[in-house]
Length: 340
Image (cartoon, rainbow, N blue to C red; front, side, top):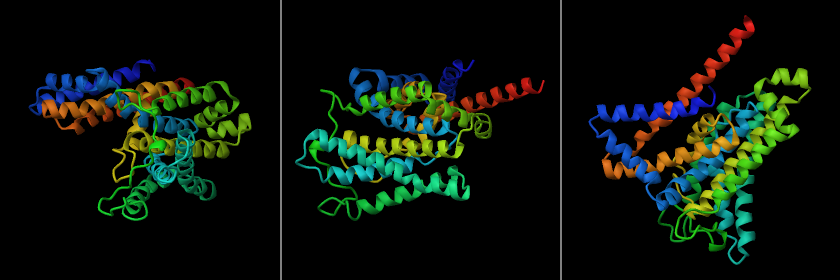
């Protein structure tokens, strides 16, 4: 049943979208055809639209899956993404003349460290005062967005001082592209990260402790003598670092500059990605590609069928609700069996 839930969620989401479009007076068949064509209609569409949009969703989704598995509800991936993007841009503007390997590595490491640093305050508030990370990480999203606006109109603004954006980062700081496409090496990093997280979760003692704490922190402390607070803190720190890395990958692989609204909401959409994948690292890859396809196809749907691109959020919303309801039902069924 658990394996069928994501597929059911996707099919139900598409059905709701089609029904809503038909009721609104649109040609649902034409709209869904355009959606498919924009996402999978050609190799260029798949590689340069779907996969490019999937990369940040996969990377951020991995970070969220890591946190959620440890019982840490990190809702601040959007802010951590922006923190990573700011750091990556600053480093990218100062590595001209360096070897490409050194420059790209410096950009990505800076992004990773910035994402981790951005989540330190929520970790401290949780450990010191018991403040829920749901609240602190969420509020820091708004701070990060304001910080981006500040730096692109201040210290990182482009040289002419006209536009609210940075200058392009150095050529050597950019991720290599697949010839003939916009697809960059960030996809390889995302796949490596998914495999690495799967190994940690499934094959290491720390991964077992992470899952135990996520399933029941009190039980993990009593039965397994696990320091649940420490495990949760490390999971949250790692989650922030991975989300920051996604911001660095976006700057060095796609935008090559920092500007307002760099993220169309990757940090929030990636929550749906992680939930659809049931927090499984390899499932995050598939779910990220699905949501990347939805976002890529949304543009084609708007151009060809005249349907607003934001309607694809209907599918995402239905997916989240179905998965959450299925999980709630499963927990209640287990509780009923235990009580019986």
